[in-house]
Image 1 (tube, rainbow, N blue to C red):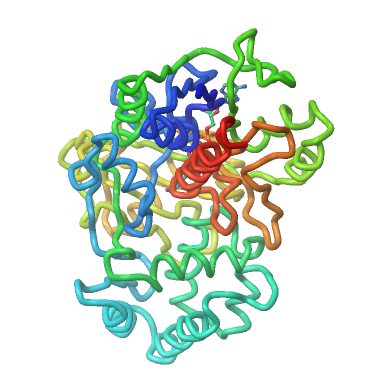
Image 2 (cartoon, rainbow, N blue to C red):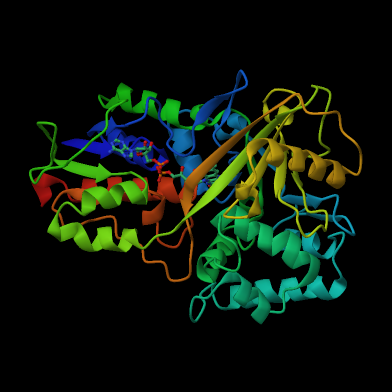
Length: 433
Ligand SMILES: Cc1cc2nc3c(=O)[nH]c(=O)nc-3n(C[C@H](O)[C@H](O)[C@H](O)COP(=O)(O)OP(=O)(O)OC[C@H]3O[C@@H](n4cnc5c(N)ncnc54)[C@H](O)[C@@H]3O)c2cc1C
């Protein structure tokens, strides 16, 4: 069997790896000159860095399994840290750290020993998690995360420093707009899972080396091909791409690009219409180079200093993550005031916010570079419809973060969707259909 995979992001590569592992010839078409899609390496001021700081968690089981399968050792390439959310500049300073204890003790003790939250808030947070557990993380009806938190009286410091930042980090959508059901699913798999599931896994190598390069080697070694700089314009009825016929095709692009293909034929026009209703959220990454001696107390710090106008959310020190010393990456998730600032103003504001968070003056930055991914993720709204992997066009399958129902736009969602499409193709093999 010969299968075309359109799109060399993490979803397409996951699909091709699964197929190659099953002895299928997988041909990956990627329009860009490199693999990785929205999770790729870029050159920044002479350093190889990422198009955006990515955070993985221990619950990313399929991502970790496939990394291991292709020979990209997660233990070496990811820095595993117990979940720690630290906002040193907030009033009072906030710090939540989950101890290395068995679940659910780690969560209970972590919440009760949090600095900067009242006892009433801690009890309220435990009650909220117990409510979600008791309902098996299934809400009667979807609503926004803000409405869910209001309903369960989640206010104050834990809302501001735990629930809302988790929502933004995982769903890349403001709590006022984000799906409470998808948020509950994320909590089920992370805070509600085993202790290791809650661990932060911070990339300690550039994103290309985390999965795309090893995946490409794995696919090639099993008779597959990676065709870079090859934009697929059209799929015809016989599953033919530029004169070459395939037994199956997996369309593994971002939703806005998939919609253009799906609108071309009547059987898939309904999915194209569904995807046309999607909204998108940006992510900004601001790299700032300081003198190499500058270090943060923890590789990932929250920037909230209590000021209403705070723009930055998280800052990462790249040096302990295998990056160049003195280079900080600031993360700005979802639509917000940050996106209206020009690059110089944004970098200057983030520098000031870091000083406020650390309560010290810092040496002036040596350089900065801003990367704005305009359509970083789909906006994860309540009741957002998701298409199935199998389309009504015979032999055409979908993969991509948006196909993984129940998950926000994440690497794990992308990988799971790719694996699911590949397994679907294998079951649906021409000889058995
Ligand atoms: C800045 C940023 C930060 C993020 N942070 C996190 C994070 O911390 N944790 C997390 O889990 N997730 C994060 N994400 C989300 C995660 O990166 C995405 O969910 C995931 O990479 C999507 O993978 P995908 O394969 O579904 O789609 P994509 O990565 O979009 O891959 C689709 C590929 O298809 C190619 N393509 C499109 N059209 C064609 C065509 N006609 N022919 C051939 N090829 C085509 C594209 O070039 C692209 O390479 C972040 C995303 C961004 C942008």
